[in-house]
Image 1 (tube, rainbow, N blue to C red):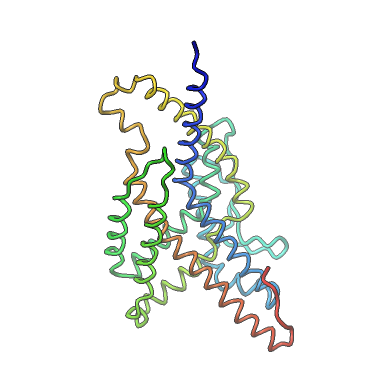
Image 2 (spheres, rainbow, N blue to C red):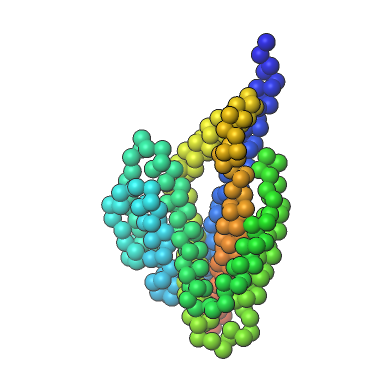
Length: 308
């Protein structure tokens, strides 16, 4: 007799585990991406309503836009998409675009469809890599900081079956605190390297956001990835329920994602620290921009303006 309750429970567990894994792996990217977009939009609206968008484009766009577009292009190459046309920095007053990457792919290829997700969120990943490179070349001593973050992140337990994410977010918070303390150490104020890093990271962070077109492009890749992981979990968990995993012996552990939790947590800890810095810098950019431009508007007898 078929036990329908057991089947439904199994399907439910597969769905929960799949969603937990994806939230674990991608949640931080989407949360930070949307927050970065919010700050970027408020900042650019402030420019448009006061001195015009051109100043913002010149001040941060000449560095931030090429990094943003390269983030798309790199993942186009990694996922075998064909780049038709690419403009790393080409401000267009008509539609507000600063640059673009046009690409095509084989819709029948699951790998290339999943690539749409990473191409869409590419500016966040590549932008974080650029921030890491800036730290490496301009902020001596940062390796000790990242070693500490790595130790704290790697040692975290993670049970995706229970959706236990609290410890990971706690590591993000403590790592970000250490990161900001290292960057804004008063001793750094006397070094030209600090000011160079601050400006360049300011430009990069201001253009790391996920724009609506980026999110739209990533959507199809996310759907494909969800179904792919769902199928894999269905097979893996089905083998475990039926007891067939014993045939694989000690090698079975390498099939399960939880085996790689320390490495994943280490990556997420480092990424979370870099993205928190980018978010704080973007937030300060908006606040300072709004205050300065509001004062400018008052001097010009234009009154206050809303950044929304």
